[in-house]
Image 1 (cartoon, protein in one colour):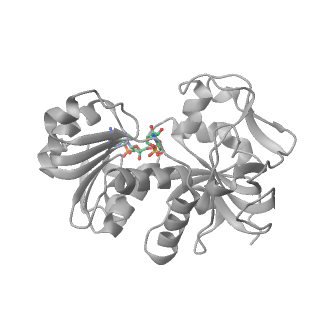
Image 2 (cartoon, rainbow, N blue to C red; image 1 turned 60 degrees about the vertical axis):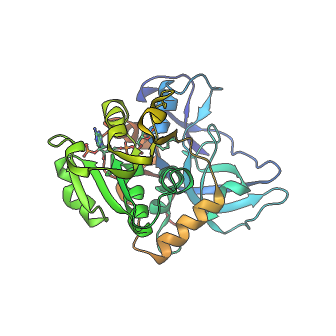
Length: 308
Ligand SMILES: NC(=O)c1ccc[n+]([C@@H]2O[C@H](COP(=O)([O-])OP(=O)(O)OC[C@H]3O[C@@H](n4cnc5c(N)ncnc54)[C@H](OP(=O)(O)O)[C@@H]3O)[C@@H](O)[C@H]2O)c1
């Protein structure tokens, strides 16, 4: 099968498009014939070695949508079912076939195709787990989403709005109308405005940016509020100093939560936003785009023709 692999850590040039044997499922795993693979910043962080040493060679990619091809042992899916999943690091989503534990898989949303479904797993789970599992965001509360036009941010804005929260979103000027169209109540142009001057105090901050943005976020939380960061470590003692709670997200791969997200996408005006689709062979270009840190929504690799 065709796959994108790395034999060493480094720049986008270490991505190799090549033929490798198809993986075989182990007990409790299903094999998915991949139609589309989502691209995440985590992919190029792994590729560059930022995430640390890992066994090589490695097939890249974490997010897939496709069709179940076979399973082994007790699995919850039959061959032919249309699914999506966040696979474990090294299992390889940028490939014609991948294997994944059945508990990490869900039936894909019926109302969208494989390309859009592949845009969901990591970013959708990150937003869901940050807002609901960790921060407990509820109806009538307020949330500030930093990086609202990014992969995680677009889901966070839509999930928070669906929950009945008041949503502030930061991005640059070009994303103002877009963010309002997906449900942001107030847009903050981080290049021209300080978010502290706009939001007053909020119940939850979701930080996907880090650095100065993360550090300035403590001051905009209500007492007892929650700061979740997808990127920054929480310095010891600081949450107590501000009388707030804080946590760094570690996204779990969870088929049940993916099924909840799929239901929301089918029943509500919550949708993935895919701005770039490239063939699998152009993973290098996809990484270069993602590394710019200024893409809107998601980049997806087309691995095979949509069977529908
Ligand atoms: N811990 C975890 O489990 C976990 C899970 C998922 C993601 N993450 C991490 O979370 C981060 C975000 O992921 P992602 O997929 O959302 O990334 P992304 O799609 O690459 O984010 C790009 C977006 O960031 C915005 N942006 C850049 N600088 C900004 C700033 N200073 N203020 C506000 N927005 C800014 C850009 O908007 P403009 O173009 O308008 O500037 C762009 O829309 C990544 O570092 C990723 O690795 C961690």
